Image 1: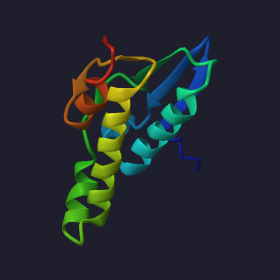
Image 2 (image 1 turned 30 degrees about the horizontal axis):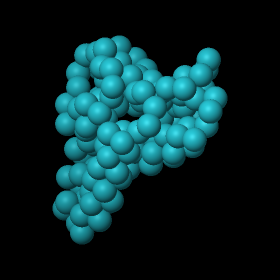
Image 3 (image 1 turned 180 degrees about the vertical axis):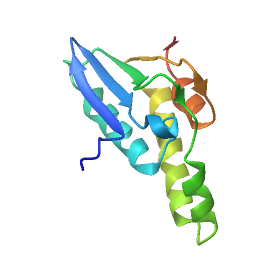
Length: 127
């Protein structure tokens, strides 16, 4: 059984595209997803082939339900280290998006809560 990546990235016609790809969980964010988005944005920041960035999602149920509440609760029942690492990555991603030098567009249709607001609010254009 193959597992699809939870974040898909590609460049097409000058557009860096980040696709949230965790539809069964309404694209609830985890640390790996935040890290993957940060890596793509940092790679594209100085890439002249990328003129702007688009953030969208796979599936039809919604953009992003926020942070992965199950992971946060399970981490909180222990030492909370994974939850702390997640929030650090998420807030770094939010800051990067607010300061990003290229135009960012977010396709925000359907459900959007918490962390989904955090990654769409900094966008220059929200559709």
